[in-house]
Length: 100
Image (cartoon, rainbow, N blue to C red; front, side, top):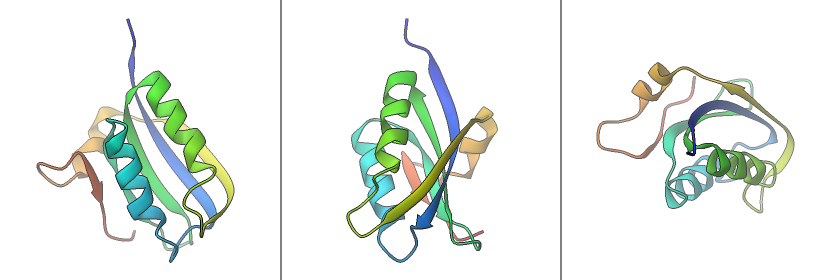
């Protein structure tokens, strides 16, 4: 049986103004994941990804590359509680949220 996991991911580097949030939302949704993504005022991108462990792990690996215009310096993933998914917009699989 494949277990479901939730990870909160912080991506740092040149990840704002390069289409990173749209790329992450599109890629995660295409992979069947749920979650959200937003810019942070410190210049990083924060995301929550939920789904089967192998798929979430693959998405985290893809976050290390990001879209072609990005330069990713670090990706940090930590376990998260299910309530973090409540930030998603109703009816959306993966939401792009406002900057925090």
